[in-house]
Image (cartoon, rainbow, N blue to C red; front, top):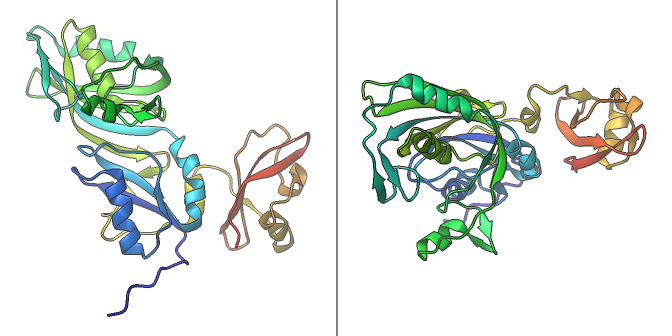
Length: 295
């Protein structure tokens, strides 16, 4: 049997519902085999125990992944009070236990409200953040703990629901890119005078992409590249302007019908609705391409 030929004609976005136990790299590797192309990347790591939305870029769409990564994300999970772990989730080793039988749902909700809005977070030791050229999870495996500078993130929504178990609540978190929900869970536990860890983390959306369009990695659906900019105005241009856009030319805003004070990004599509390029503000009344996708 002859080897499978690479498919160089696949360009678009795949929304995968990642299973527990898979790394994000595992999903990318599998998608490369299923789609027949090496040119596959993902828009942001989802920890192996977590499930849910992982957005893949295929072919030329890998150039668009930075736009996906920067968008807000939504998660659900369970916060378990009374037990701390070294990973801040239920895969780690228990490091401390607390009697937190006195807490109630109102106290938990109040703590969550205090963690809503712009906050500073210290990344967990078991994470992919790099310090001194090494990822924190590598240092953690070596038994090392290093100082981590806090990061500014924004928690847009932090909702709490009670369960039948008074030591467990369900949380829904809508947040900026770079947020660690595990850290939020641990912080809530500490604010209530004890400790907590996270379990059953599930990412339900990344920007415009939700579980509604997610598929298994074994049977991915390739969405158009323009789907990255759902909710944005798509700038449709005639063939002569599309040619100039495809050549990456700096253009006047008026040629693309862009308002003088519009901040961008500006997704430009051809007459068929295919994404040709993404423009951004340039000098004066001009705009320039951040990404050119034609050809």
